[in-house]
Amino acid sequence: MIAGADDQIERDSMSEAVAATAHDDHHEVGFWGKYIFSTDHKMIAKQYLFTGMAMALIGGFFAYCFRMQLAFPGMEVPAYGVVSASEYNSLVTNHGTIMIFWVAMPVLIAAFGNFLIPLMIGADDMVFPKINRLSFQIFLLSAIVLLGSFFVEGGAFGGAWTSYPPLSAKAEFSLTPLGSTLWLVAVALEFVAFLLGGINFITTAMNARAPGMRPFDVPAVVWMIVIASVIFMLSVGPLIAGAIMLLFDQVLGTGFYDPGKGGDPILWQHMFWFFGHPEVYVVLLPALGITAEIIAVFSRKSLFGFRLIIYSSIGIGVLSFVVWAHHQFIAGIDPRMANIFTITTLLISVPVAEMIFLYIGTLYGGSIKLTTPMLWALAFIAEFLIGGVTGIFLGDSAADIYFHDSYFVLAHFHYTFFPIAIIAVFAGVTFWFPKMFGRMMNETLGKIHFWGTVIPFNCIFLPLFVLGLGGQHRRIYNYQHFPDLAGAEFQDLRIFATMAMLVMLAFQAVFLFNFFASLRKGKAAGRNPWRSNTLEWTTESPPPHGNFGGDFPEVYRGPYEYSVPGREDDYWPQNIPG
Image (tube, rainbow, N blue to C red):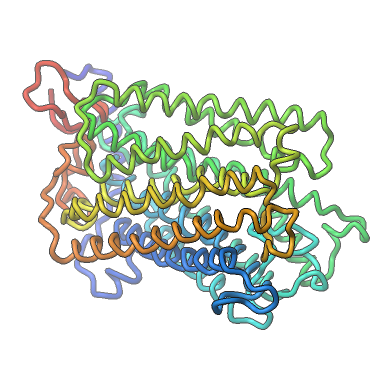
């Protein structure tokens, strides 16, 4: 393949841009500079990754506690040393908060974004390395504040992860006023951290690409992380304003959400969900990007409809701003508005479904190799489809009257979010582990962990669809007190789901053992163990400081040129001339 004159001019201009952003301080640093206060994007990615893993263990422990309460409730005093009613509310609230804001976002966006963007576009680092370091430091502070709320008088906030007023706004309605405020401060700090990170991701991808790398030579995962960053930055403003008003209600006694003072609690719902539903796509798009990279590599085929996938991602981002009120169908909004949001909710499913079918088209006829990352990628597609199909019922304003706040919603949400926050994360970690750490993970242990996670997951949440259809309402501490709300006759299903959760949690020990044992004794990975095309696989494993040793790669083609007719190798790295 011979580049034309226009391509060469574009490569030359990009080369100048890369040189302008190159760092001159590639010198050896001490322990504190390398591991604690590093400005290297790879180390910051690992800091986000390990912090997210630690928070996932905490969030999983919270789930263990409240699921045990649901399976083995005590009528007055907690049975089996489980939890009290207020503790139950705090655990449920912070489980959701942690898994969304302190696991999915830092790992999918911050960890993978930091690690992959400079490497995949042929840059030596982020364009603002000190801002990058600051973003992680603020994120770490936010995690400390959130966990610290469990140790203040009254305990952690227990008003659900959506923090609806008046429960969250007025001290007389809240058993944990200080915990509520700390929860709010922690979320605000986390948003500041990701705003700073988003600035870096967008600017780096736009301005620091390797010579010759045109927009559609950029891999899908980079595109989707950047689009997700744009969505976050455009949607978070109203929530920040709403959070400030909520903080004023808590601390200063204002009445923004108090009807007695002229306020409106529904205002918070609009401001929260204007951010909250785009937030679903903020974490979904990086997960879809990770899946795209993996299925292309392990089916040895070009990503089917690559440009259409990118256009669909942009369409998802635009539509994500006009679906928020489907969370408020029974909150008293105008039925005419409900009809509009029913249409937009169903409409946004079109580009999402289109992307899934394009992924299936990539698999069709491919030379598929079922490695551990590929198993996770296929599981993501299968499990997310269940979440998408069941969401259609909730997007209909008439049907949602009956489904709202039932365990059907909870099951749907987990079939949407577990593939995003857990399955896609495992796919990405097992795929890029060789590049991050220079060693291979054990495939046998990886597959044991895969099946030990996916099978119990379905055993946990498929029964919850039945519970929801049977009338079980969410956020009930002891269902034996409410026999009309899917009470004692469904207790066996609650116990079954809880036992499945214990099995799934136990298998995470296999992953942790495989992860840390492979760090020390795993087989040396080499530069490109998966025979992939993208630029991160052209440098050493793990990459050195500066990534490419100052010799930036030049790009000649797109990222998915697999099984090209006439080539002896079934892959064609982006930096290899034609």
